[in-house]
Length: 69
Image (cartoon, rainbow, N blue to C red; front, side, top):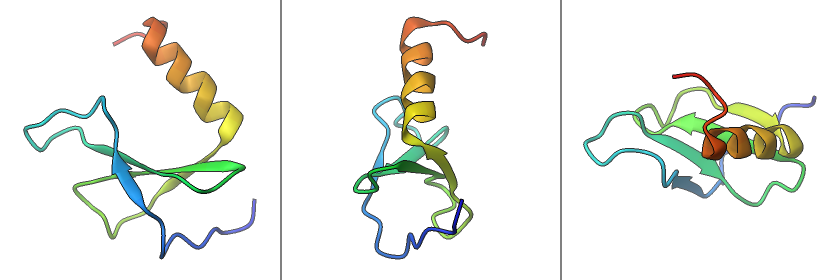
């Protein structure tokens, strides 16, 4: 996968992130084939980039409770 320029990405906090400043995950919309994900506490840090289908499968598994704690 080629590097993706995320400098102009519009990040949004996941609705599953808690409100006390911990466990904050942000995703960036507007990338048709991939989903960039980062830790909101380290906005200048690295982002993980997942293929859209893989991210969708992961989110579905989380919502169903299919993943162990």
